[in-house]
Image (cartoon, rainbow, N blue to C red; front, side, top):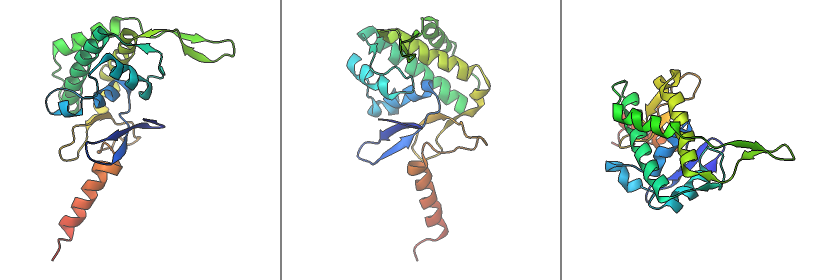
Length: 198
């Protein structure tokens, strides 16, 4: 579900919470991943990706036609973005040349083409392909990783939380994926540590 500032996520067996990744390229990472992130995998079929895209900040609605090749390319790009973002969040700039090449390859495809209708409404030339969606994601990543926002990529400070986000707060002091989730858990732990049950 798309919210005004972010998405509604649900951890397995837990309550849902609002998460704002801050940018499209990091938003894609909430769909799953490799290793420990495999338990969160949401993109098993091209239809899964087509169903997720309208919930992203891409603004493409349900116009995107996704093929099996598009899904495979999405999983490759997502894995590269995961590694790039984790590296950036650690403070390192030792990015993999292969991951940067994957990003550049996706960004080189034509992005969705904007159109304007008779009532002056803005939309997209239809159909939008999965490759065009990936180009939009990759171009967003080029802006983030190739500019000052790079220093604002963070990993949630919560225990056992691997969510990555772009800190868009004015002071640049965001620590948690969500105050509803990891922020509140931290507050409760701190309170318990200060006032242990006697």
